[in-house]
Image (cartoon, rainbow, N blue to C red; front, side, top):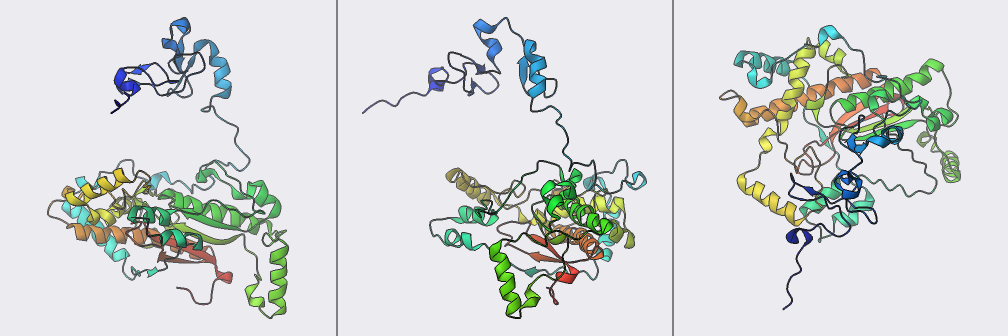
Length: 424
């Protein structure tokens, strides 16, 4: 029987073609690839005998990497951390909302440091503000036909099925489709300055998957204030009501001849629709929140909003795993390295920063869960009212099973003039 070949680490030598520098902290050799004829990678070249005379220093733009001191000037011109020219569609804080310094407290104590009376008063305010809100949302669970075969494949286990349900088709195989990726914070994004939208004055549909907390508010303001308002101010008519090719033109003509004019868009709108999967309400921020008017009308302000957004994480505190479930999930993860759970779901079970032990004898886990859902609902209701005031017909609904994602609420909105006569 042949002896098992020993690995490079077992023999105390670096892998072939890899850096010979031993990383003491990690108890292993550096795994970076080296240039032909070299023993060390660029980061550890200072350890090479033939290059000891050259000194490496920390990059002043990003101390996470080093550079030869005698090549610093050249490096600063091409370093990925250098400040790059801002594009035309970058406008500082255009979607941030107005900042009222007087409303934002300098320092607020954590929820766990509140007295029972203080917490009790907050909960009373929450329940009073939530009176009359519809907390029973409709289920509208759908999946793309392209996923049907994979979802029904008996070879796929629970983890693979969950992963498929969480995915969005990003391949976009249509030949006449044009895609452009913008690397920019939504807070500074001015849509009407993007060339393809500006030149064609095209309508947009805003789609967001897990726009965590404040990002949802920034996205809503980006769409309905920054983009839509720019057309209202200029009173411009679009050059194209939508992207049309020969096929769609023929389809529209056919519909018209058949007497189906109601299926043809009559009035153009800058924002044709909004679809956002909501999540991470505990990451919301009062300054950027679009529902301030709604909160103020209820007698609430920045302080209450701060605690409600923190308490929203309680919505999942009842989903804690037993020791058996934790062991089972750990085993599945090891067996299936391709399991790609959402980074803020912890495999489907949220771990909150305010655990149930922080409020001894005051609230049960189930009570905390209900309060957390009320907080989420109240914050979302502010967004609903904001969209209504901006001329949209918004709806909240469940778009997937909570076993797939605990953050399973979808916010959709259509312009009022294009919405169905009856909405869910």
